[in-house]
Length: 364
Length: 139
Image (cartoon, rainbow over all chains, first blue to last red):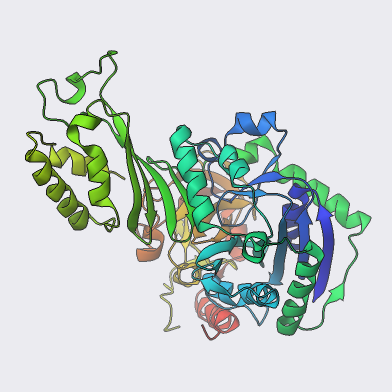
């Protein structure tokens, strides 16, 4: 197996290299790390929905789209990449591509163990340490080759990441950052020091060699660099970046395989009052609309905050957030929590239109 | 080929798509083999009607979990229609890949020549048997 150990290269090159190898019909293991940051869209991410383009432009932050799966990521110093390009008939590939992730991630799990970290694979494709994600991954078929990519986070700037994302409002951004603090981790945070990237690379190569056999180092030649530059131009082409992608009616940010931050708009006044629905207006004349920002983990609400509803205090929506805490994101369970809350609320002389509340809570 | 549903009246491409001849045009979709290989498909980017494609150009792309793959145009031609149901319901690619999960209809530049590059009849069974052996590994 050819080994392309590139060291630190510009962020966009870290992605173009595996496309280039697949185009050139070359198998290989690539070990590299970004020397400069860039934003990387997954094959089907929607640029306009996902990325704060103005912020990226102000920061001179390049944007690239890879032709494999996985979601939007911020590539930056403090990350080490391992990327495997295999012929589609390579005997070590499994029939189901997603099943192969467990094999592919094992060398990284073992490399982390070499540093004393008890990492494990969380299916389908996360590596976690102490239940927190420490590695991002993606896969795809390119030119008849199977490509698997992953990284190990040595450190990670969550504030920077939260700025790159296009998010609806400051509080949503804060909660996204909070969820990343809570559900992502890094080697530096787990170990109390940041290990040398070269050491992490060495351990990855040792464990990939144990699996795939002897590695033959290959130079990052001028010819290969030129081919990579050509692929960079393709992957950063504005038309390619703006290809339509997965669009959601609700804004949702995936933090890891089990954790999402989502914005649930509430477009009608929920309170029992004469000017209900779109007739109900705030004191400043605006429509009475609001939103729920929810953090859902393992299918349960771990945080629920209501914002901007004009009758928030009177209707006791803050209390509803407590009733919803730890409830499964599943209609019968949410309905039960809302009914319990509304029953208690009615003791204070107020009530909420439960049907409307359920409609907006469960809107997709 | 018992493990997969491989209709005998269809043509197949080397990347596991099916092609059905409809007069001068062809209808294209993913084979049972491909949908099983991909797993649950969660997204498809369908081609735009009116778009002209060279043989081997990207026809559409699909995603399943963290895996993404492409389906290539089996022959040069122009897209006449794409299945607008699929973006909102990509599961059709898994549940009814030869029916409601069709992807698009293409008007080929040279249908007869294009069909010669495809796999059909008894060859299709043999092809998918080899493909299955190639990919079948302990999971």
